[in-house]
Length: 461
Image (cartoon, rainbow, N blue to C red; front, top):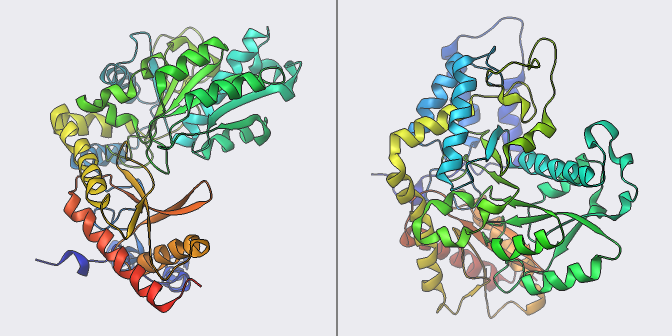
């Protein structure tokens, strides 16, 4: 049996080394190569530089290798290469996507009138959610956004989106792509556990209302940095009081609502106007695989575009492509269907619970460790922390954490990440796959050893 610390997460090669190795793969020639030769090239030049997400030391991002059942479905989808956005392109593909979406709505406890659409990523799901919110706002002002555009608003400069200061950067992409600009996006303060502070939110809204029209409030159930879950119900009540659309970004965290003891943390998602989710995270579905849900299926009418050759008016056959662009995309529903059928809900809940229990146990173990500063209490499978050293002064701490991160990841045995919480640079581990606190502790011990080496040498000064 190979020892865990002998198996590299990736080659550890430098940027230039990786570039040199891959050049031969894009040296296109007049004559082709055999599949056997191509396989050898890929194995030698590319595979060493890919991340082994299933390595227990990979704790930096939200990625995982495909789950066995999901992989089976993805292989069929690849073999048949179906376009699934309309019945005329793939009767089985279009119908299965529609049935899968309805089943997922039921699984997550959404309203019977809810609906959803598969998308390429959570970024695009959030973007469409904000478009739907903006379209809804335009309707309140008496015009059709799809026809008149932003110039239909009398006071465009007043339009505002509120989100947590820890919300995903895809919201910036969304307001950019909608032509609103980043000035539209205003952030809300968070509490000690990095959740939206509801009391401060009320004060912020009171201060903004005279000069801003808040048309959308974004709640995050599982923030990217810390995995914190914003309080959905209180924020829903505030959103309704100011007649704003509420979008829940559940790209990372929504899956955890399936765990009975965690369900209460997600109470209120069924009230949201829209909810995004990434099955390619904890569900181990192949990338790309994201979903946007809406509480009222008719809200997707705002996205519908028809033509003379596809999505024709009056047809009653399934056309998932009417709910979101693009008109050609992968058969993402199949891998979800085969994964759930292969595992069963009980096994999925067990799979989802494992990393949460491991991170919670790790937090408890580290709470008495004098070398570690814990930066929040974990809501999900993410833990942010700092390594302390008597050789490192307070003003050197940020640089010290970056040095630890760089050294840890460069050796290829463990992979962590870093982020900023306010002005603090913090280290971060993300547990997506089933794991144990003991396994996570191996990475923490490794990080602490590297920190000692850096601190003793004074490298952060």
